[in-house]
Length: 91
Ligand SMILES: [Cu+2]
Image 1 (cartoon, rainbow, N blue to C red):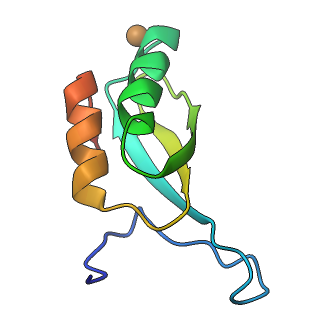
Image 2: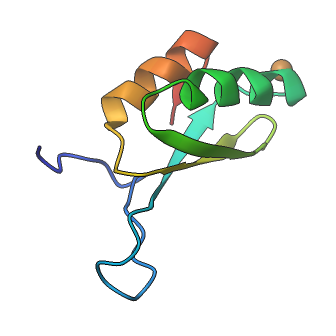
């Protein structure tokens, strides 16, 4: 698996090496305007394999921050597809 990610995704290192299997990635999503948008994105992204949690900080008319927590890093292309399925775009 390659790490051909983007500047908007990263794997968190909580500072103590190998113990924590949890990956946190952030994505910026445009086009969201309300709680329904947030719910749609959470539902679609949350349905991806291995996703433990999806947090969305809504920014109306801008790029909303979507934080994805999972056991292992998730392919950006999978997140992009899920976001587009919900009707929005990765910034
Ligand atoms: Cu909405």
